[in-house]
Image 1 (cartoon, rainbow, N blue to C red):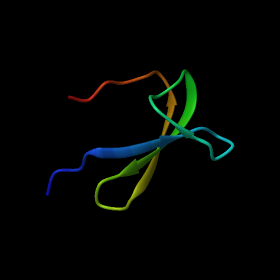
Image 2 (spheres, rainbow, N blue to C red):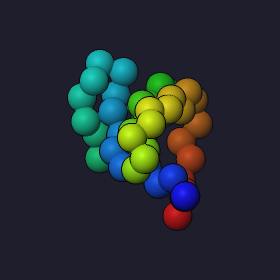
Image 3 (tube, rainbow, N blue to C red):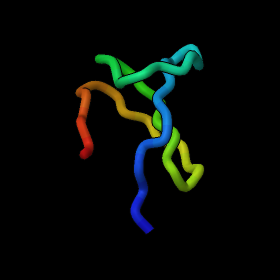
Length: 44
């Protein structure tokens, strides 16, 4: 099953529309949560 990014969150837990520079929390379509720390990556 392919994982897609479902939602982005800032470090303080606010939902954001797109990733920002710094730490981002990614909620994936399968329910898992990952972190992206540093570079903004675009997945199409």
